[in-house]
Length: 465
Ligand code: 5AD
Ligand code: SF4
Image 1 (cartoon, helix red, strand yellow):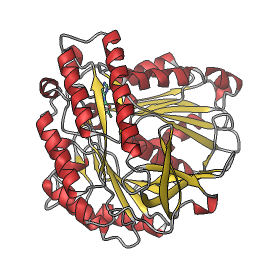
Image 2: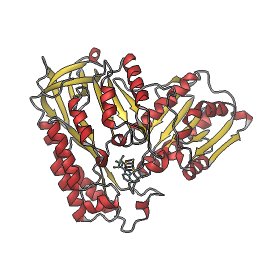
Image 3: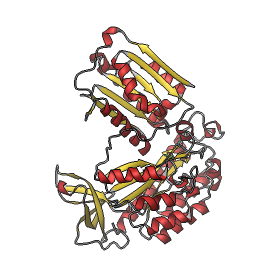
C-alpha cells in the first residue's frame, strides 16, 4: 500500500532554497544504485538544478541508500545524523533520502521520525516523482512516500551519466531467486527484462554520445529475457555487440545457476564482449549453498569455471563470498577456502553474514558468532590476497590494450585503466590519453597493482579490442 505523507513545515523554514540550486547525491551500494542516482540527477537537471561536487555548497543533498548489509544501513543513519548541524545553520537546505533501504516501509518511517530535519523520504520505485517531492520541499512540506507493492521502475527517464569512459545500461530489474540471506527480492521486486530493442537503442545513443564501453546491469543478467518472447542473455549480447562503434561490452552480475553454454559461446565468439565474469560463489560448501537456496553445488560451480576458462583462456573471474552464514561449521568454511584456492579469482568481495529482517536466514537457528565470522573473514581475505598476487604475477611481461579511465598528475604522471578482462593496469601517461585504447606491457607488480609501460602493439593474444 502506498503511504504518502506531506507535512507542512513552519513558514519560517519554507523559504525558497538558495539561488544556485546545486544538488549533491551520495550513493551507497551497488551499480544499480549508481544507475538510479544517474536518473535522479537527470530528473533534477530537467527542473533546473545543477550538479555540485561537495555537500558543503549544495542546496539539495540526496542519499541513495542500500540495505543489503547492516554496515551500509548504519553508515546511512550516521551520515544523515551528521547533517543536522548544517540544517540548523541553513534551514533552506533540502535533504532527501531514497533507495532500497527506503523501500522498506518500517525503516522509512523510522528514519522520517528520527530525523525531523529530513525533508523527503521515498522508495526507489517512486524515483520519477523526485521533482514533485523537491517542489513540495521548496514550498515547505515534508514527504514520506513508500510504495511496497508497485515495484516498477520506469524506463526512459532522463539521466546524467557519471562514468567517464563506461556507461551503465540496465537490462533487467529485480530478482526472483530469494537466496535466503538476501533482501534484494523484497525491495527490488520480481524480475523484469527491458525489451531487447530498448537496450540496443540505448547502446546506440550512448555510442553517439561518445561512449565506446558499456556495462549491462542486472541483479542476475543471465536470466535476462525469461519474461520476454525469444530473448536470452546470449541473444542480447549478440544484438548489442552489433552496435557500431561499441568496443567493449561488460555485464554484471551473473548467477551461476543461469549461466548457459550458449552464453559462454556468445562471450567467446563476439569480439567486443569482455572476458570477465563476476560470478558470486557465496560459499564452497554444498550444505551451506543448499541452505542459501543458491541452486548449484561446488562441483557445478567448478564445472562452469572450467568451461569459461576452456572457451576463453584469458577470462578473469571475480566473486562475492559470505562467511558465517547460519550453520556454517569450520568444515564448511574449509570447503569455501578450498574452492577459492582452486578457482583463483582475480579479486573477491568478502562479507560477514548479516541478518536481514524478513529474510528466511535471519530466523535460522545456529547463527554464527561475530568473533567466528571475523576470524573466518580474516583467513579468507589472507588467502584471496595471496591468490590475487599470484594472479597479478602471471601478467608480468604480457601486453594488452588498456582503456584509459583517468590520470593522476599530482606526483609522477600515472594513467590507469583496464584490460578487456577487467585487470587494472597503471602506466606512465598524461591526461590526453583518457578515453583512448592504449597498448601497455606489464612490467611489474607493486602492492596489489599491475604497472606497465606503453607498448608498440598488443601481444596479449585474446585481447583483441
Ligand atoms: N549478509 C552478507 N552479505 C550479503 N550479501 C547479500 N546479502 C547479504 C547478507 N545478508 C552479499 C552477497 C551478494 C553481495 C552483493 O552482497 O555476497 O552477492
Ligand atoms: Fe540476492 Fe540471490 Fe537475487 Fe543476488 S540472486 S540479488 S543474492 S536473491
